[in-house]
Length: 335
Image 1 (tube, rainbow, N blue to C red):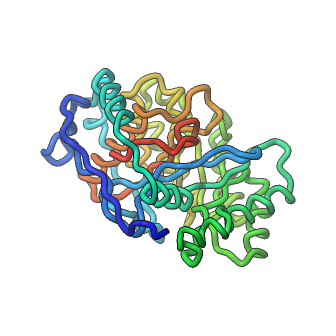
Image 2: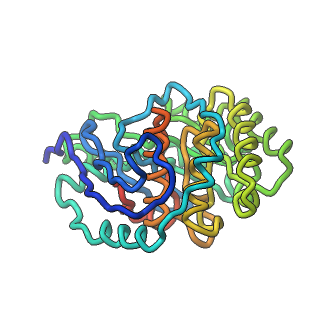
């Protein structure tokens, strides 16, 4: 069985989802094209929980794959843009229903998407009973996420398919780095930080947690925002905090977790997404996986629109990262 080399999504115009200033005159309501053609399939949103490990996934905007050797430096804070945005919730919900009603891909096309999704997963364990031994097992699974016989049947055994990263608590970063080095692979190590999952520790403590994780070998840092700043409309304070996170990360990539289930509204989701990107985030992520509500279709639509609008305005390309039930069923929209 040979997998298709390319797949392409498409979109249609769905006006009325957003109101506010257009980043370059095209209007926030305009629906762009779907995923660009890339390699042997598109970046799906996939992942699942199994055996105590969590999986988050990374999805790519239609503008293409960001250069992950570089960092997104962010922009100046533009509160005039942020203050005028309102998300039309009923329109977003209708759009989500339309996406879920689409006919799913089948057979070799489904296999191609799922294989690509595996390469976008951060294979994660964030448990209180994590030890060096189960971190070692996690890293082995990250290097060999799919059985060899299945890969041979799909003619994909020589493609070097691994997960995108392994993600652990800061105290377990050294264990992950050691295990991956012993396995002879260069899969990145990601670490949660900044008082994960609540983000309710002192700023000085949160910054030091980032620095320690980077010193121990983490090349990606998953920070959580202070949701209080969003709920009280303190956008400049949120921007300033994330800018400090960006500086503390040094050469590591910054992934900003919004905890969208605790932000109160889709408008806040959009605004928090935009602030995080302005402040220099390389990724924006839906949730910690620990909230009551994690990734949902409407939230994914709003965050992806924010990514697209930010790209139109700045030319900077950002990753989208999903965590939770919808990630577990690999069915988030890529429009």
